[in-house]
Amino acid sequence: MLLDELRSTIGKYVVLSSEEALTAVTLWVAATHIQTVLQHAPRLAVMSPTKGCGKSRVLDVLYETVHDPMMTVNTSPAVIFRTIGKIPPTLLVDEADTIFSPKAAGDSEILRGLLNAGHQRNRPAWRISGPEHKPTPFPTFAMAAIAGIGDLPDTITDRSVVLRMQKRKPGEKVAPFRTRYAAPELNALRTQLASWLGPLRSAAARMVPPMPVEDRAADTWEPLVIIADLAGGHWPAQARVACVTMTRHEAAQDEQTSLKTRLLRDIHRVFERANNPEALPTLDLVAALIQDADAPWAEHGAKGLNAYHLGNLLRDFGISPANYRFDQGRQAKAYLRNRFLDAWARHCPDLLPMDTAPEPASGAALARSTPGKSPMGGPTGPLPVSPPDGAAGPRRTL
Image (tube, rainbow, N blue to C red; front, side, top):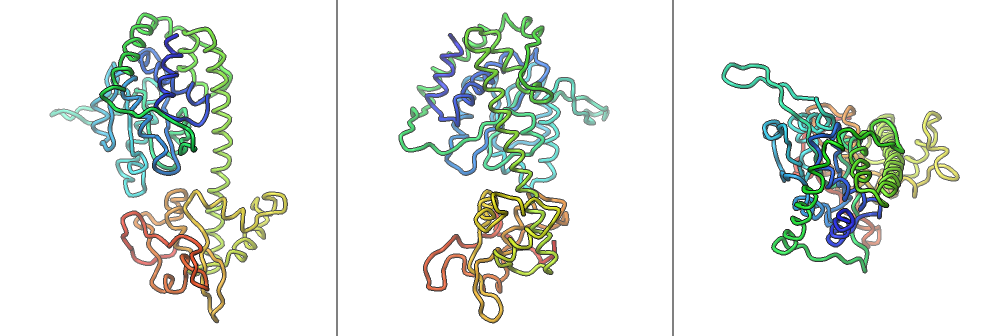
C-alpha cells in the first residue's frame, strides 16, 4: 500500500519519538494533497529541546513529499499573504524559535495571527492594497509545518499535530540524506500520492469521519483520519490510536507547562517580596514557595517541593543554582535573579515592561557568585550567560 511505503521511507531518514508520531507524519504529508477540499489545515509543529535532534531533516523529507512546498527560514507576513491563493502551497517554516523570539515581537505577532487564522478555511486577512488603497482580503488557509528549538506559541501548538524530537539514542540508525539520491525516491512517492488522491478529492470533501477526540483536536486531526479512511485496511484504526495517544500526551504537556509557568510567576513574587536581591539561597526560595497557601508547592511530590524538584522544573528554562557568596562571607547554593529574566520575558511577558530586555549579571553579582567553581576550585555548574545578543540594558525592577 502507498501509505505503508511512504511511512517506511520517512522512517528511513528520521527517528521520531514514537510509532504514532511516524503514522501522524505520514498522514499529514498525504493530507497536503487534498488541502483544497479540507475545512481545516492542521499545522505540524516540529519541536526539539536542543539542536541536532533532526527537526530540519524532517523538513527536508517533507519538502520532497508534500504538495507544492514553500520552504523558508525567515520570511515576512507580507510574503505569506501574497503567496497563499486558491491552491495554496504547503508552508515549511524552519528556525521558528528566531521568528517568535521576544525581539521579533512586531512581525512575529502578525505571523502568528496569520498561522492561527490559516488553520480554518474562510479566515482571510484584510489589508489596504493597490494604488486605490482598497481593502483587500488575502487568503490565509494553507497547511504548514513549523520547526524550532523550544516551545512554539501555545496558540500554534493548539492547532498542531505536535512532533517532539529528541536526539537519537546509541544504536538508532538513519540513512544518510543526500538530495541527489533521496529526492528522486521521495518525489516518486509525491507523484503517486497526487495520482491516488486527486480523483478522491470530491469524496474526501463529503466525508465526516467519526473522531475519537472533540473540539479543536478533532478539527486538527480530521484531515489525517480522512486520509486513513480513504486508504482503508489497518490505517483507520492506526490513525485513531495515534490521534488519541498524541493528543493525550499534549494535554499532559500543557498541564506540566502551566505548572512551570506558575512556578516562574511565584518565584518572581518571592524575589519581589525580598526587595529583588541579586540571589536567594535555594533553601530559602523553596521554603518561601512552600509557605504560599494558595500555591501547589506544599503538595508537590510525596512530601512537598524540595531543591531537587525545583531544579528539575527549571531545567527546561536553562536555569540552575550556583554557588553564591552572601554577606559575612556565607556561601550557599542559590538562584541568581538575572538567570530568570529571559524566562520571565518569554513565558510571563506581562511581568516585564514593554521596552525592556533581559540583562546580564552585574559586575558585583559575577564577582560574588561562582557558578563554574566550588569553594575548593572544582567545577560545579555552567557559567552564567548573557542574552543571545550579549546586549546589556539599564538596570530595572521587574
